[in-house]
Image: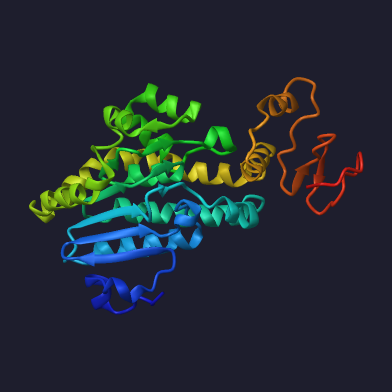
Length: 323
């Protein structure tokens, strides 16, 4: 990725192809910049490099006066974005609070650059929208969804809290009761329900998605740029307020909680493609139970349920081989 040092580049942007991004596809066509998360093999989830590349592209879009509208989408037809890359999280972040804190800084910086880009942004929802992918969707000004799209928050079902935009912005968009329904039940919402609730602006057949996005972009282009920029800034007031009041706290809490038993069980179930045993988790945390160890670097024995250090190959209590 090139270093942006020239004042000309800072104030005018660069040709999109000059960046050499690895995780995103960045294109500029006339007055439209299109940023595509290009990880279809993992349902366009974002790892740290993806977040950094998105942030760089947003900064460039904001600097390029030739760009009037920014479109954000995902590669393929299966997914717009499904949130954080759980493999990277499990391998390098979740059991290391300091690393999680750094990762969340990159996540927050990406979101700040997107909200403050100074130009209208359109989420082109081409497939499933999950977790942090919905937070990316909500950070955009407008959203157009293909009719097969589903939207879902999964934090409370998988060992996290959707406090990177969802707890802050969903109540504004869909109302308090519906936000609680999405965040507490973690059930999918189809495209037409999302339209009815105000989570997207339009729903169209997938074959019409590009034409509809282009039509909306043209309408946005035919508005006054300074007035549009300040209108957006004013509209951002409540988003910015709720974000500033909560996201720093969320960063610190999530960094510590990411090594918890709940998160470990959620990841194990995801990795093994099996349901979480919620009764077991509740039992370990209730009443006179031994309790749930909230420290990091522990894993649970599948036979006797005792927690052992990650370095153990066998359970120190019953001798079972640890998976």
